[in-house]
Length: 125
Image 1: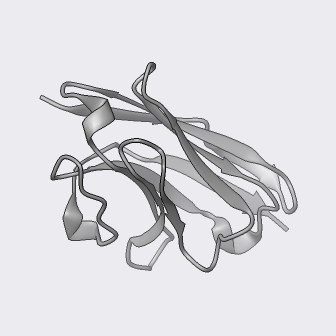
Image 2 (image 1 turned 90 degrees about the vertical axis):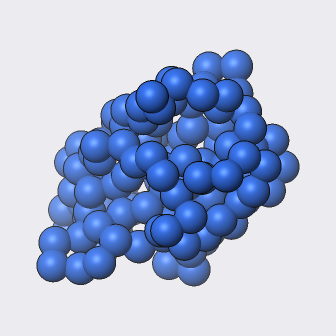
């Protein structure tokens, strides 16, 4: 059974930085693309970033491009999201997720399963 556990969330002032981590267990991590998504109160869950299984390809939502960086360490079965220049509108619960299919990189919520439990990021103005 695959488990994803996020950490690193917290409260930060606008302009600050946070680094989220997501540790995976249960299947061959290096064969699956990994994604980060977020859900703000009263809003639908939205795509943030995705990284391919080999870390050779990344893709970002326009709202975070140039501020956030997704990376992974396949030796540690962990994916990261470095968030710089945080804005109040980045406040949300952040979730990591694993693509359903090995060696494939999806972008839609339905492309991903399983999901982590989420970690809260709050950016104050």
